[in-house]
Length: 142
Image 1 (tube, rainbow, N blue to C red):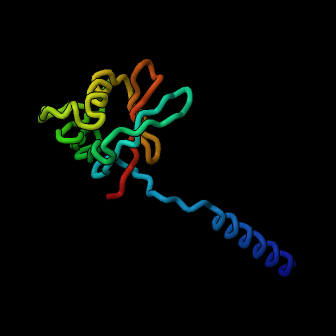
Image 2 (image 1 turned 30 degrees about the horizontal axis):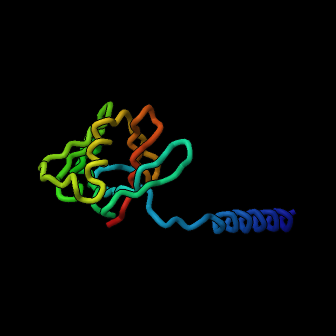
């Protein structure tokens, strides 16, 4: 009887270890809180098609949370503040005239129309146009 129990326990342990080893490696660490995390704009997403349109210049639209509901960052040449309120608010603080640089003018038009946001794992989504489109921000470990 002891032999059967030992064999059953050994097989169970091997199955458990094997299942744990099959978990896909993550290429990011999912933040458990927003404070201290940095986010970069991946682009504008069309909710129907899933198509992502990047904004130029790449890497110019980012922010870092200084609390669970407030972040500071940059858009091309301007400083910006991000506030996770209802609706969320992204405020351009410095107002340097960079509307002609890359897609800054488009970005500034969009942030005036934000309706809601969601945070899931490594993605922050800021919805506008009746949730037909959203700004997709991805967690950055920089």
